[in-house]
Image (cartoon, rainbow, N blue to C red):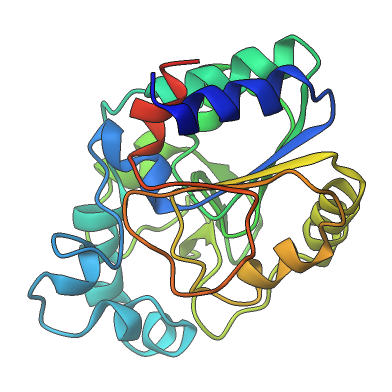
Length: 238
């Protein structure tokens, strides 16, 4: 155990109001690609740039191509929670972790047993008919072809926040509340490049700000502890 990980353990052991803020890097160790690393979605060839495909405008104008990309790149059947997901669920069960604020849409935190998960960008496990509002699950989308349609004929849209769409205000308000009240904030697996989500960390007022990411983060967080390693590998040592 490195000195940095020992320090992390001390901070966690001495905290009972931890909030975790995470991004795509939390799930890469489960086999889900992130967006901005060299092997992430943004560096893979596709007919259109992923940023364009994952926009509301593209969804409306070219739904066939949108859903082709969505099934191929955003649906990941068979993936399992990794050590990071499991450790966070363990902390929540012990009463130390109060909330997870995530930019991920894969549902792996819940699969690991976490209950209070604030999904800023939605979830691939929730899909709704735009016409009648009927709920459709992950398997429905995975097994569908072309533009998925409900029994009523309406298009079934993933409950995922696309570019040009706003975040859920209630989820944002709850995230601000938990972060502002936390005595320890752990930021993991995120480049902090996606706004307005990244701006939420500015509400933290405590003195135990920890940043865990496998690569350096451009923004100067004035973090109390920085660990440049995969988060699952790091939390597994605690």
